[in-house]
Every structure is written in structure tokens, then in C-alpha cells.
Length: 396
Image (cartoon, rainbow, N blue to C red; front, side):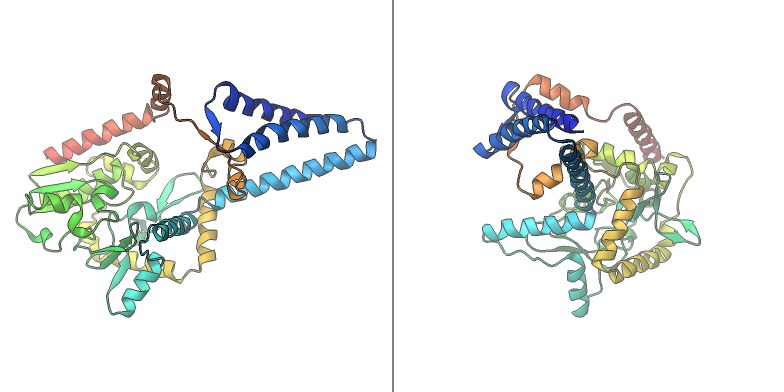
């Protein structure tokens, strides 16, 4: 065990030497980085090899200390990796970071949580609800698939929008919370558009079309309305191609628009599609499938209101534990994979021991390597199916 631990320290030393000195893919941000990454592994390796000449009892005690110490360290890293990737924890950290940056820039920042804003609005007599979108309603099952937590008449239903006809609190990125009045289908549109005899444009997409953290009069679709007044947005945060296809089949077919705009975001649409393939949304590739969402708006609004009420009644700790349980059930519980745990990413970050950074030298080889990591094969094939089905739907 002592020799093995010494070899690990020695390999770590050569690993750092390779990336920081030989290939220079990374660089130190200050001199303490060189001390931490070069000196410490080398010294520990020497001490561990020398310790093999100690008395047998001392060797046993040292080996046990290393064993239990390593177990404690990696158990802590595993827990931190799970904990700091929970949606509620990420939201809290994001809010704190933005507030700190805003304060340094002299900008007033509303530090309340979204739920606190909703509660304050209700106290003022405003019928407010938090934004709800399809991705928020999915939970991992024991088989690894994602299932909607909304059930109507003992059947799974995945709504594609939020609660209808409500003052909807969306988000806060610039200091003030952005809100909008949802339409009769729960989307971010003027309430009178669904009653028009003809519609010019229907736009499907994710947060860009939803208008995430953008005032209602500044969104992409609101700008389109300046030229085409009867334009409807079916966009919702975190939508992927299958959710967008579902929006076309559930809602656009009733509006019969002259133009359909499909917004694709290369940043995460393929990842979203990979997740959506594990949900009820994949059924929309089957001709004739529908959840009949338009006809069930009242039932959907009640189910979403019940979900929001239950969520509001949960304590902060209970919410985090529920999220943690869902993560542990997922096929890939670790956000950064095993490599992130092995390199103690979370512990080093929390202790301020991240003293290196990427050099970011742009080369053709780097670009090729980056492109090679993009999802291909099965997901691209599925995207092709989705787009063909979308085209068929629009042509119909």
C-alpha cells in the first residue's frame, strides 16, 4: 500500500510535468501552483518510498492512515460533486455570483429567490405563478428513462407550457426579475392571438424563443410581431427538437400559420434531444400520436397548480434531498464523470487550490478534436427523423 501510494504521487508529478512543462497545454496562475503541483507530489513520493524501511507496526499504522484518509477524501469529493450539481444549489450559487458581480459594478440586484418573488406578488393581490416548462417536470426512473410527474386520470401527461392566463415570474439575470402574462395556452404571447382567424408566424424553439430573462416587448417573437402582428411563440426553456415537434403537432396544427420558424441552438439541442428520446416525447415521431393538450387545458392548469403548490410547501432541505435522490437514480449521477472525482475537482475548487488554467491556443488540431467530441451517429439520425416529421406536419 505504501509503495502503491508512492507510485500514485510519482505518476501525479509526471502528469503535471507533462501538461504544464512539456506540452504547455496548461499554465500556472501564480508561483504557489508550481509548488503545489510539482514539489508536493515529489516529496510525498519520496517520503512514502522511504517509509517502507520503518518498523512493521509503523508501516501498518501509516498504511491504515492512508487508506482511511483516501476513503474520506474521495467520499467527500463524491458527495460534493453530487451536491453542487443539484438544480437548487446551482440556482443559489448563480444568484449569489450575479449579486456579487452586480454589487461590484454598482448595479442593484434583487437577491430574492423566484419563489419569494411569487409570494410577495400574491401578497400584493397579483395572481402570480413561477415559470414551469417541460424539462422541469421530468424525473428519472429506476430504468434510467425520464417520466413526467404530471398524471391526469392515472395517465402520464407532459405539458408543453406553463399555467395559462397567469402573471408568470420567469427569471433574473440582469438585476430585476422578468415576468410576463401567459396566454390562454400557457405560452409567452399576448392573450388575444389564439382567437385570430389566421396566424402569420408560429415560432418553435427553446429559451431564446421563450424569451428567457428578456422583457416581453424585447423577445425575438415580439420583434417579429412588429412586421407580422399575428405571430405566436411556442418556445419554452430547455426545449429540444422533440419538444418542438410536439408543439407543432399539439398547437400549430390548430393555428394553421402561413410561416413556421424552427429555431435550432447548436449549444445544447443535441444534448436535449438525447434526453428527450427517453421520454414520452419520442412518441410524437409516431403518426397520429397526441396528448390532446389543447382540449385538456383546464385539467393541465389544475395539475400544474397542484405541482407548484406541493413544491412551495417543501422545505429547502427536502427539495435538495429529493433532487439528490433523483440524481442517484440516473444512469450517470456524476456531472463531471469519474475523471472529475479522481482529480478532486470539487475539493480543490472549494479549498482554492485551483492554480492552473488552459492556455486556449487555437489550432486546427484543437478545432478538429472539439468537433470530434460533438454528438454524432444515433443522435444525428434521430434529429433527421424529427426534422422530417416536422416538415411532414407543416406540409399537412
